[in-house]
Length: 147
Image (cartoon, rainbow, N blue to C red; front, side, top):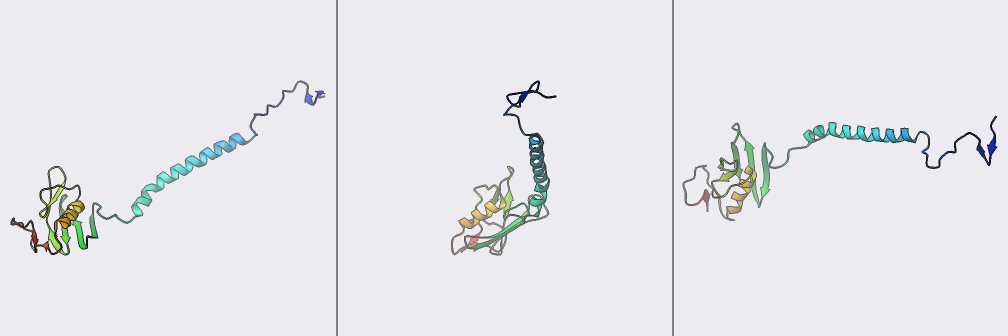
């Protein structure tokens, strides 16, 4: 038998108003688990998504673009530091320096971080009426360019 005094059962503890609803703790854990599962799924899919993207210009395998009206192309060849680079279809000789930077026969006083940067700098050095020589050899004087 339950006796009540002003609506509260005698011997029963009053229910605190700040107490959470039953099941809300389960719902909080469920939300936490969903968030963790989503994060793990994103981390697992990141390499797959990155591998499916097309290679960027100037990546480790090569580059091809029009830069200042000139068609530049570069492909990595069999050697670790070997590149075949052309500007408007003519070969541009690049060399790798001991510090890992690159220089070209057109602009051989400065170093560049990548073969693409060195090729762009060579194009910058070419005047509007100049083009690269047909051979890759450099004999001095005109820095590998011909009027």
